[in-house]
Length: 397
Image 1 (cartoon, rainbow, N blue to C red):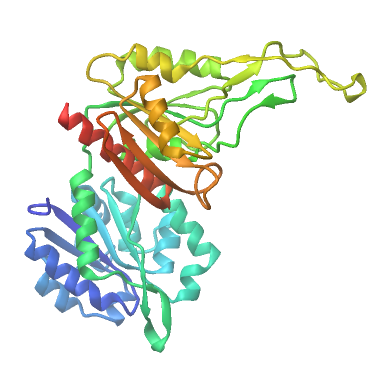
Image 2: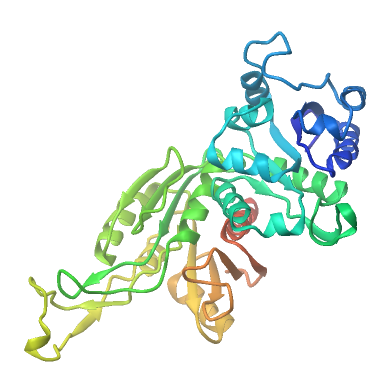
């Protein structure tokens, strides 16, 4: 997948910059066209001549030194992938904030190609809340992060922050290039968030869903070239270019999904739809002085079962099962009862998984009896695994 691909290799100013030389060599040996971009700080650790000799074209170091009035635009538009090795705290912060202070950060902002960043820094810096927030922001935007390893650091310290090995980095590039734009031509419908069923104008029956997992799936689908329709109950930013339908109740979600699902190639029902709603919602706030009210509930529309019963040929339907016990058994039963192709199940009581977290751990069950377990990871990584499973199933159909 690397042969013939144009890769911009950004190198920033950290002691781990010397490892970027080996990454460059491996990429070229694999058949990539590598355009090296070094920051001013990087040149204090590694030489321009080394990269010019190993790469596919001479080193680029400045917005103004190439004789090209817009080098960042040319590099960004022509790249199949932009790789930053190492990615320092400064570069991560500038990229997350949209600050263009040199050729590398300008190129990162000027590209629509997949971006892979490989952080490397001292343990205290890697753990700093500002750095963690910047990394989380980049992940939400679809940037691929190759996590640093634990090991010996500059100055003899040992801890987190050591740059991943060159072979790990090149393997990550191969994976990203293999999946880049692989959903082009598909229409993906995603639901996200928990529904709210009104008791009165103030109170509602709901759940703890933050919508983060559904939005991560929509973001990943859009980054991989799909046309995305997102039906959501939450105010998280949608992927650029997505058709967004904002709803609140299960009935509204059923109407929105029903209007789009017949024409969708893939439907991912990540939303946590309330199972019950009050039969009657009070028109005014219920006052405590009136005593404890009697609230009679009725079932909400079973959106997933309806989609399973009406699933058109060729469509892939994915459900979610948030469980507290007997996860596989309950999810397997739901897989059959709802008539879906796949169920993504998780234990919402597990540490770091489920509602309101930025991470999740799931098991993906297929109608053919196969399954795939995804250990605890950020929700964008889980989204990637879900869509990978969808593509595998569609390939076998």
